Length: 140
Image 1 (spheres, rainbow, N blue to C red):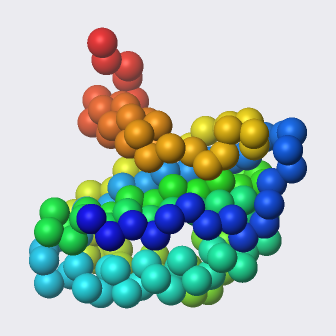
Image 2: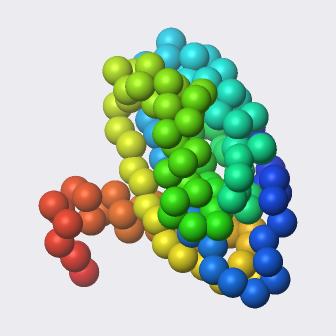
Image 3: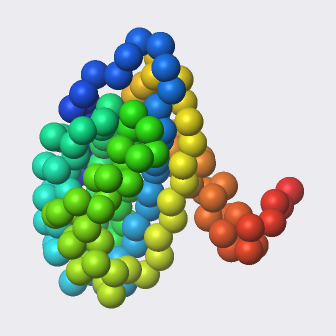
């Protein structure tokens, strides 16, 4: 499983809050995997210089056609500014037809707890997928 390890573009303050996003993307077919992975690397390059980015990591599971991202930001505005800026904006648009499923989850974390673990991120993504599948209602 190829992993791009947690990278810190801008060191976070020792005390404060980070806005965290985790995502899971599944592409429709194996033929979409190389394109998605290459575009992910472009977005990875962008996040490494993005204002307000405290850290990011990517996990690729090409044989399962699944990709995970995890990032921490100064605030929600910093994340959204990154998402609206090229090349990320164009990447999102161009890859939309290749997507089979996507899950996003957001939360706040103390900057002293960065980097966020992949175990935590995957658990949150699983819970979010469950919530999305039930139309936003909690399940037990």
